[in-house]
Image (cartoon, rainbow, N blue to C red):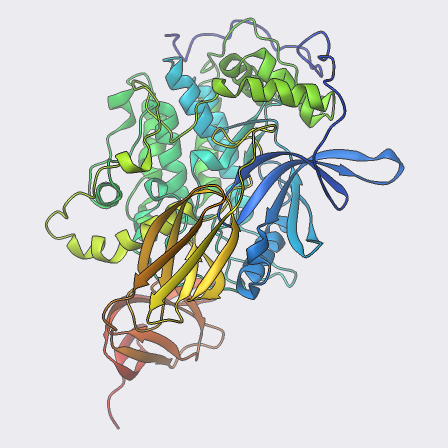
Length: 594
C-alpha cells in the first residue's frame, strides 16, 4: 500500500471536459414519464415518503437541464402535516446556496404532487467510496480524506449560521451527517446533501418528542438522549465520518441497535492511530476533539474544525498519494488544486468509463447511452451499509439480523426509552442523493405499488412511516407505497408508542393491527417567569414560552433557551394532572402553593 506522504507522482493535469476521446453512440431518444416540464428518465432512489428521479428539465427555446427531482408519494399529498414538513424542507434547502451544499433550483406542485428540483451530482456518496476502497483492499489517501471533510465542515458552518429574512438566526442543525449524505463528484466537488431531517428553530412543524432523526451510528450522545442539540452535534457526527474514512473501519456500529447505542454512550473511542499508525499526531488530535462526548470539549463550530483540517494540510503539503497516470477531466468551472486531486482519486477508485459517463450525464451529453453505461457498471459500486477495510461487504438481509443485546448494568433505562425509536430513526429523511450507491439506477425495472391498512386498539393513533408523520390516524389505508421493508410507528397521547416493521411485496395488500398498551397518566406542564421570546425544549420538542405542554408522568429533560443561549437544562419529574414550574435563579422548581 502506498504511503500517504509520498510526493505527488505527476504534475497537475490540464483542465479538460472529458476523459475519453469521444462519447458513445447514443442508444436512441430518451423515454420516461412526463411530469409537467420534466421528463423523468430513471429512478435514483425511493422511500416511504418520496421518490427521487433523474430528470430532464425542458424549457423554452430548446432549454434543457439534467436535474434530480424529488416527488412526494401520492398518498401523502392529502396530509397537511406532511406537506408542511416538505415545504419546511424546501424553504430551508432553497436558502442553502453554498459550494459544498447541494443546490435546490425550484419547488412546487404539478398535478397535485409536490416536488423539489435539485442539481444532479455526477459522483458517488462517501459510503460508496468506503465500500469501493474496502473491495480494493486499499486505504484512502489521508489528503483525500482531509480535503473532503474540510469541505463538509465549510458547508455545515454556512448552514449553522444561516439567518431568516429578518436577520434572525435559524439555528439550523443537519442531524444526519453520515457517509451516505456526503457526495464527492467526478469534477472534484464535495456536496453535503439531505437537509430533510434538519432542525430549525422556525420550522412550522415540530419534531415529536422521542423521535430520533438520522442514522444511529453517527448520532451524538446528546442526540440519542433526545436532549437539546446544537451545531456541536453535527461536529460529533463529522468526527465519526472522519474517523471511519481514515481507518476504513466502523466506529460505533455494532450487531444490534442496542449495542450501537451503548457504544456511542459508553464504549471507549479507539484512537485513529491504533488502526492506522501513519496518521500524524496532529490529525489524530483533531479527530479526538471532534469525538468528545461532552459538547463543550468539542470544536465549538464546524469552521473551527475546518481551520484545523486546513492547517494540517498546509503543514503537510506532501500528504498526497493519488493514483499516478490518471487523467482528471475536470470541469472548466473547477480550478483549485484540491478539486483536481479529488477528481483524480475518484476516477482511480471507480474507473474511467463510469467517471466519463456520469460527467456526460451532468453535461447533458448522449444521455441515453451514458445512462446505459452507468446502469451496466452499477456492480462496481457495492450496495448496503458502509463496510470495513478488511471485510467482505455483503449487506445482511433483515431476517438475518441478531436480536438486540441485553442491557448492560446502569443503562437499561436508555434502551427502554430509545430502542423503540430507532426503527423510525433509521428510515427518517429521504436523502437528496443523486448518485447513491444503494439507489436504483436508471433503467431498473419498476415494481408495482403496495397497500397497507393500519388499525390500532384504541383507535385514533397518529401513523408514522419511516419516522415521518403521514397526517393519518388509525384506522387508515396507505396506498401506492413502494414495495420493500418499512417501519410503522403509532403514537397516541397518554399511551406508549407501538412499532412494527412490515415487508410489502409488489402489489400486495397487507393489514397490521397494533396494540398501544396500558395508558400512562397524562398531565400538562406550564413554565412560568420565562424571558419574553424564550423557547422551551421538553425532551427535544420545541415550545414557545407560555405554551401549555402536554406530558406523561415520568422524567423529562427540559431546556430553556433565550436569544440562542441556554438558561437552564435539567431533568424534572412530572405526575398526572396539571403542574406549574417556575424559573428562579436560572433553575426550574415546582411552584409552591400560595
